[in-house]
Amino acid sequence: MTASIATNQTILVVGGGIAGMTAALEAAECGKQVILVEKSPTLGGRTSMLYRYFPKMCFPTCGLEINLRRLRGNPNVRVMTMTEVSAVTGSRGDYNVTLKVQPRYINESCTACGDCGKAVTAEVPNVANYGLDKVKAAYLPHGMAYPQRYVIDPSIVGTPEGEAAKAACKFGAVDLGMQEETLELKVGSVVWATGWRPYDANKIQPYGYDRFANVITSLEFERLCDPQGPTGGKILRPGDGKEAKNIAFIQCAGSRDENHLRHCSRICCMATLKHTQYVREANAEAKSTVYYIDIRVIDRLEDFYQNVQKDPNVSFVKSKVARVALNEANDNPILHGVDTEGYHRYATEHDLVVLAVGMEPEVVGVKLPEDIVLDSSNFIEGSKSGGMFGAGSAASPLDVNRAVQSATAAAMRSIQVIHKTASTEAA
Image 1: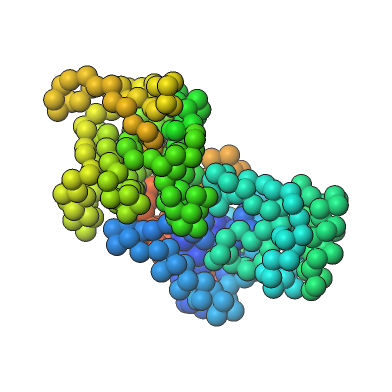
Image 2: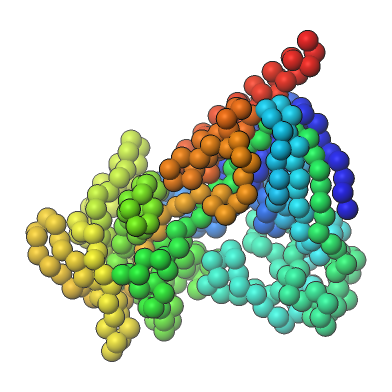
């Protein structure tokens, strides 16, 4: 189905994470019409997959709940999930956009009662937990999902499992006949808030992520520590399910490296400092060792760093780990390298290794308009004509706080484009 919506007085925001939500809300609350599109079934992005923020150690519900309330109450924002931008043509103030909307197989009658999920036995990897566990093939993405509607995985459409989900729904919300839709719309400005993705740890061969079960990424560790995560908040080794009590954190895993990501991802140091506190909370006797090149924290975050340094259960080793080997007797990873402060070689055994992987823009692999200008790391600088803008971690490696600031700035620039377009047409 093809439909035409919006005008050149509309702002399109691509990406429904914390930056996209912020950009959409700031523009909408200034009276502008906004379309917010997100390729996944729910808004929130990677922020919704955090256990806590640093440095206050508060929960993501703090920011997300407020923004979701603002979205629900603002008629100027149209939210479209499971939607991707397939083409953008035109110029500043007059863009033609093609959207592809994937079927959810659940319509707006859904009450999130969960009966469809109870009716199926098939399981799929749980994206919200980075695939560390599985969920039913009829599922609610997570507790704060917006919209609060279930999703039917395409793998059970046309199978008895899909029919069982449909039969279980008392409200007629399961629609297995949904098809992909194409929408054509006209907008005046585009904010690209497509977010970031973790660097592929499989590419960092010396660290053994692809070979050793007890080497994981920092994002996976974040989910392990969350009571809503795959282990109920217990820090258990993926290899054997035993509690991890001696954990190594390797900084700059793939960042600041000409063979991988050239840039500093900015959030990794603070994320690891936060993770050491998760370890202490889970087990007061557990030890954390941070292997680092240098710890990069600024302004208000410095106090958090200093408090972690005072923790007797946290040690810091100034070293770029050369490689990770394996003690085959107990599946413990062994870190090899040189301590650059003491200038001595080490071969230190830990029961779990966490790689602080860097962030790269999610736009890698996305077909962007030719007008878009990217920096050397593929972050969005804007467009040549000045009608499109990068926001949040699509524009630069940023933490949540700075991503929100970046998104607000992008929204204000988009509003300027809309105003100038209106003024030109009036003249």
